[in-house]
Length: 398
Image 1 (cartoon, helix red, strand yellow):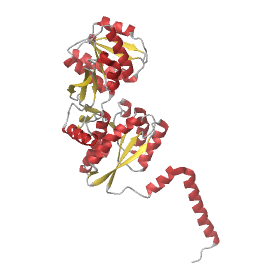
Image 2 (cartoon, rainbow, N blue to C red):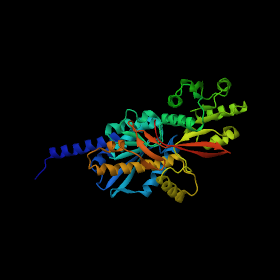
Image 3 (cartoon, helix red, strand yellow):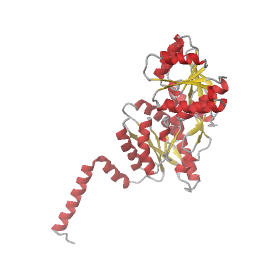
Image 4 (tube, rainbow, N blue to C red):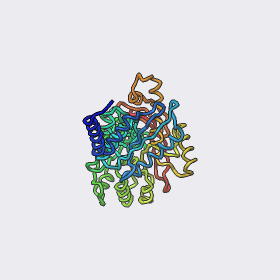
């Protein structure tokens, strides 16, 4: 059959237009084109890793990934299928985070882990929700990550939950019915924890007078004289201080220089070597909540995690973000198993929502209606210049 010159010209024109379209639309369009013509193999499960591989949040992302990789090496398959980790770099930038999230959607991942950084997670969450792909946040504590987004879950305790558990600790173990709350002015993080602490402590003591004062300060200040004198005059034994590390160190130093021996109680923001290195003797007996401590074995999975971690990294102390990354991967493959058991009667998101008493390295995990975990909280203190475990409090909002 002969092809006339007009037909040949039409074919060449179509080819040129297609090439021009691919060239001008960039690599992403080309990748999408290739992806759509190369669907995911049936014997592969894809877990998206949504993390800052570069930029200001890179170190935080590396810690989460370290735990994910450790769990993946231990359990590289699920349901007889290979688990493929698909990485994207959100570069620690909000305007790139949504593009990176969309890239995971285009690559047909089954579930997403990450991102380090509350704001980055919020940016990616919109994309995952629109695509109906469940995601598990690892260390983000901002309540907004999961609130209003039924497809985003988290593995670490939410900010406000630390406030509840701190109130229970004060009531049950510090044996006092008088507390001062000290928080930074215009700080959403501190305000959320302070509110939850106050409500819980009042309910436990059955007295509105148990919170004897709420003292505010401006973050970054160098002089806390006025606030500390108010605390001294309150005659309260305990001060709940859900503040940033630098502010908290300076506040406690000034309190000790005035001869004040109040017990200062804080959050996981204090679980850094800088607390002891910069605070010195002043930070002795400070107590704080956190979600993991290697010396506080919580479950059998904690033992498993510590064994594989130390086999690979020696006596190096595992960071809590690594343990949480480990748990996020284990929970993801557990949900995939349970989804298969439901014979697709339920979505993967529904299966995750129904998680009850999942035994992770960082404790037992049960998701509430917002996708936030009700889980074991660890209490730490500074004693003789070292972090010492003061025990755990079992998960409960009640």
